[in-house]
Image (cartoon, rainbow, N blue to C red; front, side):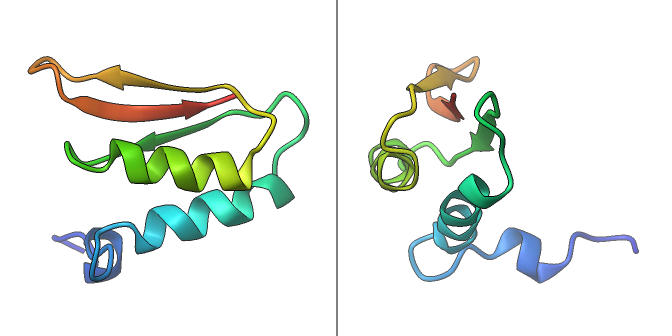
Length: 77
């Protein structure tokens, strides 16, 4: 395949459909020391953190910036 499938690039109407699906199902697959890293768009941090807090109420949730200073990765531990 020469291109990414549309399903891997299309996050739904708000861009978070896939992220929400991954985060809400991740607790079923992780052990107690598991970690999730999610790449996000520059304007998605607040919404992704809320989704992560709901899915992982006891977790530590942090973010890292890209070289331009935008939040780019959310880390859930």
